[in-house]
Amino acid sequence: MIILLYMLLRNKIKLTDGGYTLNDLEISGVNIFNSKKKKEILHRTLVSFGINLNSQNKELFVETTPKDFAPRKHDLIQAILNINDIYLLTRENVISIFFEEVQKLFDKNNVMYISNVSIRGTSGFTYKFDFSIAKNYRKSQREALILTINKLKPQNIKMQLFSFLDVHNTGRESDDFVIINDIENPVKDKDFEAFHNYNIEPLLWSNPKY
Image (cartoon, rainbow, N blue to C red):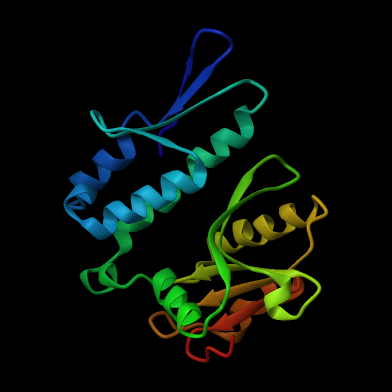
């Protein structure tokens, strides 16, 4: 991952990947702009994190101020990580991404939700949650925040935990869930321990009782 910093006029800072992310994917055989589905993922990711795209040189960038430097750098890094995940999509699951499968299930059961919710934590970082379900629908005192996880990776669990914790530290109350695709990527009970320790309920796609 490459992040470049440029000082602009009027106390502005430009953070950019210099076009590295999308060009590196293309070198690896993944041309996002030749696929409607991949372009939708790219657009959704950029909007969620407030990142700009230079269509000429495929540069991902954001302009910020010294005050907001840290959270906006975080946004750019998270966007790059999400876009890099497109490389992992196979021909089979490009057609139906796990997020969309969960969304279809919610629609089928008339679940009232908001998708791709961006919430700022007490650190100033912004986190993207796949779904928010209102407390009135759930007959609960709190809304539900949900992350969908197609493949549970130990190295990503810390960030997933921190996103919930950082949002809670702002005083926002929610019931927290992760929906895990255990059909395509089997998981073990020990994989859930960290979530349970922080009162985040893991739900398995093989047993969708939600």
